[in-house]
Each structure stands twice: as structure tokens, then as C-alpha cells.
Length: 172
Image (cartoon, rainbow, N blue to C red; front, top):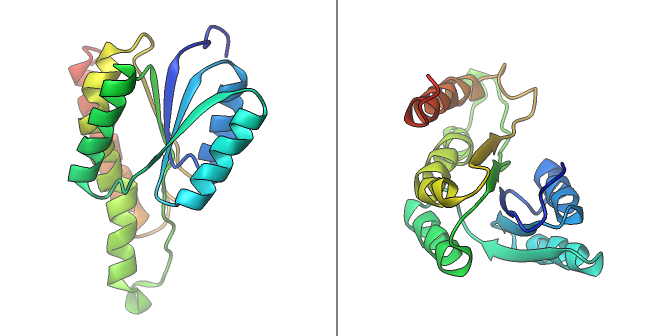
């Protein structure tokens, strides 16, 4: 991960799991690490740990299932940094149940986070990414997610989103 010093790296889902570990790693490379998540307490703990180790980090509490909140978040980041060089989408909700016992509310929430959250963030952050030097978007998902309902549907939809992004970037 050479050449990352002073790059602006935004990590959605940066307060736990792979997102948090990614934030800790990027911060060791001298990036300005922006952690985005719902849980304020774990978000604050992650930022404090990065800073205690000499890294630069800032917390941005947000509910990525709310398009309006994500737009406000993107505007706040735009006013502070003007760009995002690397966007990592690591937010995820895992819900697995046999269809006949499925709690549709929990399944819908998982779709809101795993698919619509990715769409909301991508739409709101695309101009920030275009202003960045690296122009990189990374989507992280557990290996178990693509093969289990109801996640198969959002995985297929994310593949369509990726194809659209590649087309927009002229890499079709």
C-alpha cells in the first residue's frame, strides 16, 4: 500500500469487522482516514485507537440506509476535504433464515444496508471520488453472503451496479 500518505480514505462500516481493520491499516500508511458507521461509541473507539497510534482519523456517524443522510454526509466531507481518493464499502447486515420462517422485516433491513446502502453511498460519493487522485471504490462482502438467500438477490444487483460504474468510467 505504498504512496497512500495524505490520501483521503473513507470507510463505510469502519467501526467493526473488516472495515475497522482496514481503517487501522490505512491509517498506518499516513492516510486521512474517515470512518463512517451508525454506532457512535464503537466509531469513537476506532478513531481514538487510530489517533493513539499516531494516525489521522475522523468519525462520521451516519445511517447509510437514508439517502438524505448520506447526501448530507457527502456534502460535509466535500466541505472538509474536497475529495475522496479511496472509498471502501464494508457495511453489512447478515440475516439467514429458511424462507418459511423468514422475518421479512429483518430481510428487508439487510437489503437496505447491503444493497441500497451501497447505492446511496456510491451515488452521493461519486463526485468526491472523481475529484480524488486514486478514484477507487472497493466493496467488501463476506464469502458466505453471495450464496445464501436473501443475499443472492442483492449480490446480483451489486454486480449490475459495478457494471454501471465501469461503463461510467469508460472501462466497458
